[in-house]
Image (spheres, rainbow, N blue to C red):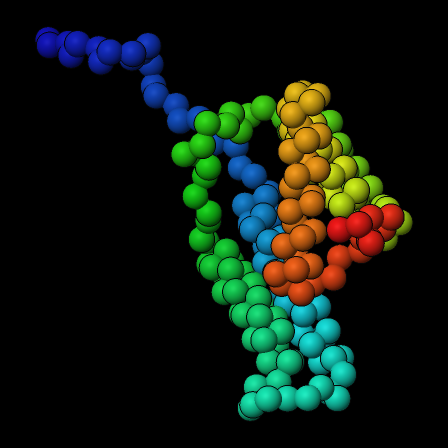
Length: 185
């Protein structure tokens, strides 16, 4: 009678396979949300392009509606291709290359601070102008992301806001609201 030596890790008895937990249908296909967002953005771009006034002076065969229509159509095309891929079983690769522990919960305080900073910028830009609202935006984003240099951060924020204001106004010809600093800069 020969008895076979047990394999390492063999406890004995019949081996049972433990079924892996199965996620729901939608959880396996969560990329469809991205597809829906892309399709929605494409539809908005196409609708806005179709509503553009046509009284522009055109210098060539391509009018001002051409680029928004192309971008909107490409957004819808990518959305459809992504949806088809996901429904056929395609999945995105996991975020393995970053130094992020995906099991830790998100820091909602940081997200809330960033949302608050962006909303404040939207509300204040027409009231106080871009240089001041931009300074608050840049400093607030740095603060929300963890920087606590109380002298350096506001100085960098002022420099970034002023440089952005001047570059857009002087070099690109895009008028940003100046607020109380309109005549000074």
